[in-house]
Length: 309
Image: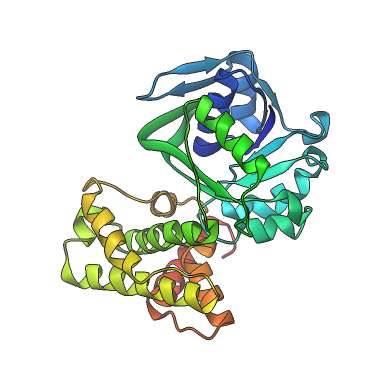
């Protein structure tokens, strides 16, 4: 399969590297020192599932030099998505499928606003991975998993072909009957964890054990369920309890990537997480006081990180 990975961070680098290792024709769209290191020494992955070096690796910062591919894996941060959608147009032809693996629930619609909507799937991933150094992806936890499906929930040959290619590359892959419900299930977990973690500057083991912050987190989960249901997504109320249980099983030292970005003064996905809960809730008249508090409390730090204050 001819594959382009747009955004070769922890997510794109890990999954793109595994597909390249399996023999697929993978083109990495990267920039700066990361691109230069991959070009010189290859893409390196350190992982409990086995290390790999893809060398030589096809890497470029000019998508037009690649041309149309069968699959585009989108691994950029949410704040980069609109720019990326425009830049990836040369990669997208009449037989291309675009698979976003971003946090949040808005990526498919944002991609479809720029590209042919028929090209875009719903999807997300589970993996703890990061750029440890230019050219080096370090996978530190979770079973690397991709969840995908057609946005209208029909079964399709293309989704099954992509699933088969991913599984053959050693990547756990799920086709969900309702991919939007699956996306919202992850969204409620990560947006609420990120917001509480960033506001408290505490690991999950701390804030889940304190009655006040635990109650805030539970209320934040209930807000996301209410917003989803008002928008026609049948997200079950029972997901609140199962998400709390998932948090209780997480390593006590765990932190969310948005939280780490904010604590280190980097631009984060605040707008795509708590900001999206507030925005999407306002569109359907659902109040979101917990996520509103988190978003507006954290917004000054976000603006400072983006040089907007």
